[in-house]
Length: 332
Image 1 (cartoon, rainbow, N blue to C red):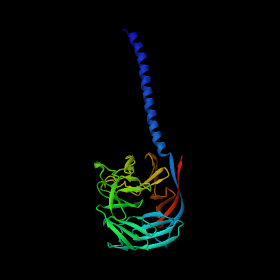
Image 2: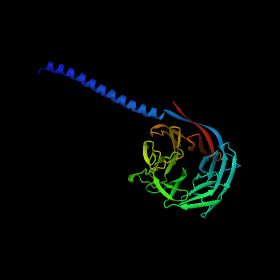
Image 3: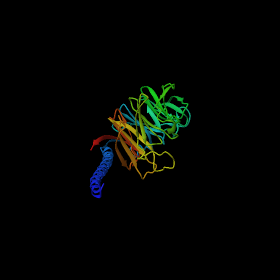
Image 4: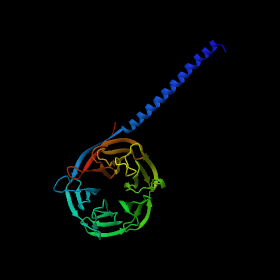
């Protein structure tokens, strides 16, 4: 092959190589842009808007020291103050119906300040979870002792659903145990962590009225959904870095609340460093897809009742109180 033929061949090959490389670079750039814009769009597709409808307890006359837990039932909102050991019961319109002081101690009908969770059995009966004594107590709304039973594990959260008690345990298996009101253990549901994910930290779960279970992993930015003890989906995004896996990560925190509203799941994480602020995640409750991420300076500890008809959010200033809110999910 002479020099002229070589030059002709090279002139044909080089433009082809340039075209191929150019197309490849263009494809790569478009792919990266699509990925970035796709993630950005998915996280900015929706926004959460809240409007206050009613305030419960925001005054010096009925001072609430700390709202550890709250529930709604039959037109009444029950607010548990674990510092003062008081139950504040309001009408849905904000009128204080009664304020009951419970006895402190370890005896029958007595409660400790480490009690953070309760639920409503009826208009006259409440059930309290004492994780320090592994005790479940039934006490009336007037403060009278009814009955109790003990568990073989350390309980952490309690839910009253379909005439049964669902108790979230603090153990290596992170099971939710099912008890009758008479204290009989009739089984368990949900084992969300495998042998690698065993957690020594406090679990966080929410059980809906239809027994859908939303379980927040205490060592990862991860939420899983279970229905009838069957795994449905798992959301996981360690890039968000919301949940602390070790005590060496003070900037990360814990799950603060997880609740459903229409077709959405709203979860909030409270950081160890208050300067970072709260993070609110909006997920599709049927698929676990992330729809929005929002940062805010104020805590977002909220619950929904009756399929989102009533939504309450805890507020800390100027006094600890609850707000009943109108919540809207707006698609941008």
